[in-house]
Image (cartoon, rainbow, N blue to C red; front, side, top):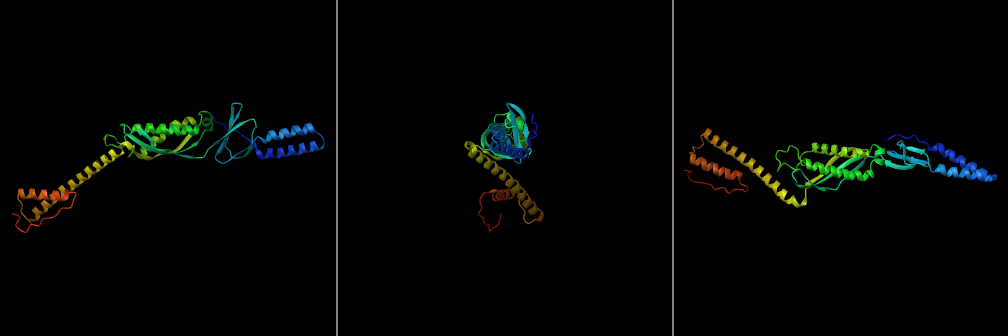
Length: 281
């Protein structure tokens, strides 16, 4: 469990070091070799205890395998020179993962990359519960991506019942990713500040086929809207002609008119009009 270590002021020991140095010099001047040599050894030993902790940094202290505490307060300090010291940054860090190939819920290979903002919140866990906490973040983030991909389809082309997909899930998918990564990194004392998908695409081997499928779906949807609009326009034209009694059409002529209007309105190319200068009958 993480605990704070109250380190001594480095400036106080700097003054003591100066005193040791002056006393040893005076001792040598007066022929007191042994006491002066001892003072020199004390001076060198104490000099090894000076440490500097910068803002948003910490220093984990261990004495002969026993955890003594963590210095989180920034400044100039002195600690037992026998302590082994390990600096751990408390700054927020970005992980911009390379897109990896994973399978979505229905087995389609997709490429997913994420941006992860994280920082160390518990120095004891980061230092002792995992071997290398930075490498741990990389591996567990990849594992979280793979699990997330298995929960949702890329889109709802094949799974029309899917309410949330990787492509359209938005905040829901990102929240699930953040929750999964947070659970996995808690063992290392890592706080996840944000996790978001920043790259999403079909894998290269199926990208072209899926693109054609999307295009076909879009064309069908567009045609449906065009036909729906054309039917409404034809219906309106017939109603207006009948209401204003501009021309009286029998059923055969109505069918011909409907056919011609549908061809004009639904065709994907411009039509060439034919002007009839004689009687329509």
